[in-house]
Image (cartoon, rainbow, N blue to C red; front, side):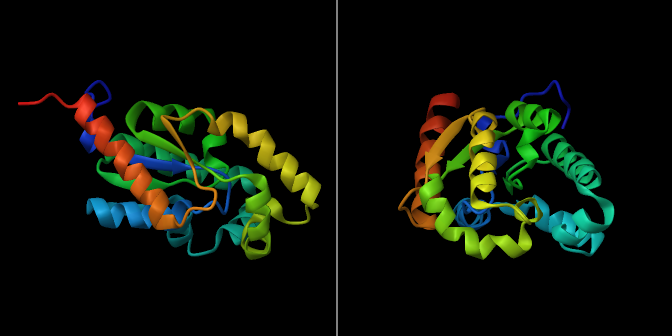
Length: 187
């Protein structure tokens, strides 16, 4: 895709951002099925590429190396693909280059889950989220709130509190349909 050529709204990738464990992958799979698009979980793709889980990449290569891999993969994906549903890892959007390319080439949805509901999922996340390792609940809460300002840079915020993944996916699809109607000229 040539950088100067603006993709039609309907052909843009849809990117899901938000704190780890909010349901980006599950919701992304629902959206992909409903739109008949390919789904890409960035962390899973990096794990396949390096044949090891993200936690192992963090331990053996370090977070900086992982963030570089993540940036290269996402920038390439945003610049050279279309019609994809993409789930970013919780920390990916913190990188300015990733944020800029996502916002300029794709439609970015922030999946927001309140901290009180998120912490109920903590026991499911501790083992496979390297950023949470050896942190107290207070430190995790501080990390959660420190990222909210970055996540606020999006095209649409979707509150996921008390909603099933399919309901969130349907809300996103409704939002997309309205935007497609507004942004696409009628023939």
